Image (cartoon, rainbow, N blue to C red):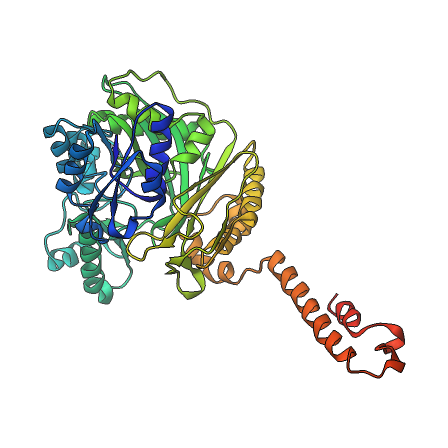
Length: 497
């Protein structure tokens, strides 16, 4: 199997392949020659220059690599070509099995505006907005004046927060429109943009669905994804703190209905916005494996990648209904970025790395000591996830794991993640998609008690060393001691206490 991706997701797929006895093929750009996913695969093939539009997104280069390696199948991971229907058709034409949904389902759901139209036909509630990409900024402005601000501009060709812009003032509309189209083109090779009404204080809750080739479709419960920054998820958990068993069942039923409406196969995610009255609205469907799939695997005991492979091989789904969630799982995304500098990416060489361990801790990573994080790709370097019997215990375990996580040579968001988990609003559980924006200053200003203790100890050591040098210059008769026989550094320690 060729894995048409890079980093931690490529490694995660390869691990399951090896357990199933499937040989793996990596592809890599010039920037990834020494990457961990290249070292993990059984063989690796070069596909082009560092920019993804010249390497990982070039369909023919991926297909040529598969042919060169003698691969039977391609797993796309997420991002890149994972939601590209033309690539699925190209795989079919080349006699390669695509590990994912058929092109027809991707056509129906991968294009966000078409997905909205299909869901309206299927009777699924959707957020008010356009059902087709908007052709011009003039047409877009006229529509917004009709439904009112605030609105969201969204890329029609893909998800993951790429190309998404919130507009609250008409004077900002044209610049936001240009920015959204440019970002969409860079991320998906498609600059089509559509418009949605922005819901105030919504929760972002998604339902994991899975289907085989015979129409058997189930949901695998939900994931709470409301801790977002710039529409990128930062922390995910399951079960959602706000869902009752009844609401979970209702949303799961609608998600299964949505998947069946397009004859879906494999793993997919139906995303919803849940308002303050616990009404829910279809947002979009991601026709691929999600970044946050480990939390679902923790509480269900399933391997979603193995299930994807078996579904592609034609096996029937062994489950007939959603498994009851077992315990609680939380995932945090560790980024090479500097929160104190407006989350600017922090590429560079990792000089020291210590990853957390212990019971029920999982770190999906694509880096190692000595690895240089490139500046041309998404700065996420790992996903840390945990499981515990209860949500409180899961929060505590995630905090403990993050306290063990040490990355030197680059700046990461680990301290920021710890501040999120310690925030009273997060601990309470009823946080919405504006949570990180609303708590921005508090999260950046949060002190780490362990760092404060370390600073105190460093100060004491420095004072001691300074006083030791001074004591050597004092007359022998004084014994280097004043203050009733108490050395200056001990006095300094008492004062700081």
